[in-house]
Image (cartoon, rainbow, N blue to C red; front, side):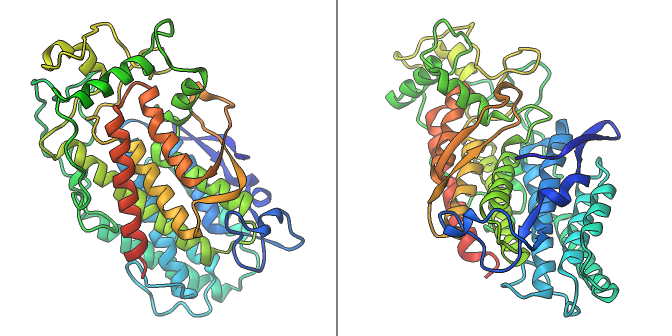
Length: 459
């Protein structure tokens, strides 16, 4: 449940954390209540403390909603989340060893305040990585919640957090995230080209960014998509044509499929975007179903999940832009089907995807279709969650929510992580912006990223 109230920072709207003290109470003692465990029933406790890892990940999600345009690309958001969470992990690990450091383990951590270390690590990274937003109020609120630490412990924690935040920001300043190699738009059948006038290709070089956990962006590169003249391509084009169109009079899409399409979209400014929605789901799980979790547990979970999400973005963008096929979106493919050389496809110059903005203008995201970023992110998230918890399924029913304006007040229920990932992937077909191979291969790549990250990062 999102209990944060809105306020404005500059021209941007974020959430007011002053009500977080009651909202983020976590039970003291015991092992984290993982999905499916009996401890998940203990959602209130007589003695409580605030998990500052969860606190800052709520702030992170709210900051995603406050960013716009070029500041809110999926890759850059996932990168910011990974930077924050590996800095937090290293800060916690310096005081209470929980695994191999991601980057550094300062030697002066003994006796330090874990909360102070987390706060300074998170604040330091977010202030540098998302400079358009001011996190001073969030930082002050976090420090006010730390009432049990001595001045000496706070000073040690502060030193640790500042060191880990500086280390990760220094390292990632050289990660090629700002590279600006010109992109040449193709004009041959199958080539991606802009679908909205004046909107250029989005982050065409993100596949060149240095990953956080995998070795390089093309490490799990998928096979090329079906050829335009194949029966599989025709079947996939006709599927999205019939199920993803804006014309409600002709679509075969059911009411639930329409709901699913909008629920997972989050493509517009003011929404979570694809990575943020998965952070929000994680926050809900930790807050509502793992009431006994501690920073030593949540710091590791969020670090692994964040690394996988950031690397999923790099892997997906490598497939989108850096292979031999930068695949056109369904709306281009359907409108120009007469040029694809496939007798089983028929052009429809007026076809539009269900996807639309607040003014009702239908659009496709401004980058190639293959592979789906949503699917890749979702599979990477699900892959970490099921490996971390030891099970894909859970006994409780997760009631998931969204901030997409076309799915207001919609609640979707799930009982497994893979179910969440697959519905997220399929939603892009119903939205009219992806082919089935985009979704299916995105799921494969995302899970492979998660598997590699879980087995190799922080060990």
